[in-house]
Length: 90
Image (tube, rainbow, N blue to C red):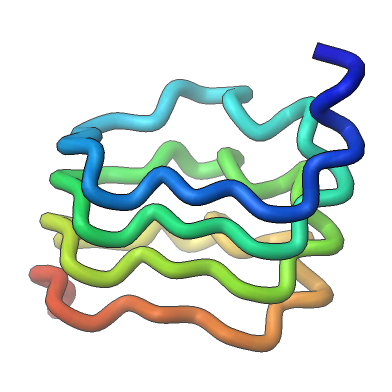
């Protein structure tokens, strides 16, 4: 997985994903754009985005999210754009 450290964009939209395993983004330390929209995600593990300190764009629109853990965005100091539309957030 060492070559994944150079990856800057990851598009996983329209894949019918309903869960993201803890630690899935651990090797992606240079990731700047992450597209997870148009899936069936209903929950996100609390520390899932922690290794993504260079992330600028995070797209989570059109999923089934109904809650966001308090610390989910902790460490995303470079985040400029966040899409959460078309979820079930209160």
